[in-house]
Image (tube, rainbow, N blue to C red; front, side, top):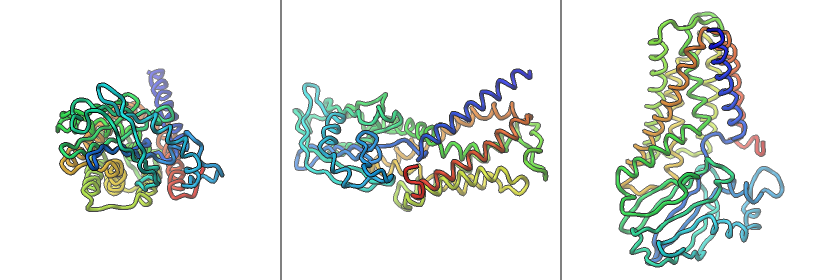
Length: 389
């Protein structure tokens, strides 16, 4: 029995170390990087637009020549020729019979919620399009996957007779346009998958949630946290976890919806640091003992902030209005499924360790302090105080 507990502790600590390593390696720690691809028509010609984050392009071309932690538009323009070749190699359109050619018509800087992007537009010349696009016009995207396997390309199709969307990844780099692309189930399924993926790679969201769940397995007393006894009934812990998860879900669903329908549009300059601060608050709250705030209330208040963060990707995608509700519902459902999966992994581990000194000192105390430090680093980074860290 002792050996089993020791092995469980070791496995749990390995998971914690892996998560912390990922967190430190990914400074922004909110989500994977995204590019935005739009296919539309203008004067009966297909127009392809690609928006790529300058931060991502810097990983390939080392744009920050003066090493000041910032990427200027001038530094980007100095490597425009190389970047254009890279873009046209990594973004390709083809019909069943041939590869389409791209003719550049515009290149500029554009602002998105998470920073400055390089935006390029091309006219597309391919046989059979746009009238015959339903017959199999294929978009292939290969940018950034070698540098970041969490990278995603968010695709919007905006043709006069049809609108649809897609999410391209290393496992799904090709999107073939068909009449079924705009079907309700197809859109819903794609965004459920993206929602699950988004919560799993959003380290700040995960650590915020875990911080709120840590104390669910201990019985509150007026003594310090390290002296709290383990809960005796599983029902007590499960109800506590359910209260936190429900509050977080309800809160972020509210603000996710408000943002997507553009009733509230807070700046990412405020939201991203606020998400990082929520991680700090949740972690430090675990160390306050009897004076700690009720965790389900904390989950609700900061869940409102996290909802704005969840909305950034969908807002930037700019879905057509007839698919907005489907994308929102699918993405939100995916976030919940991803969240439930995390909770189901955490519950049995925490339950088996709740009697141990390891749980109180390493998971609760050391874990909360580590998460708080990471949250402080993210806050400083997102406010520009640690550029280049």
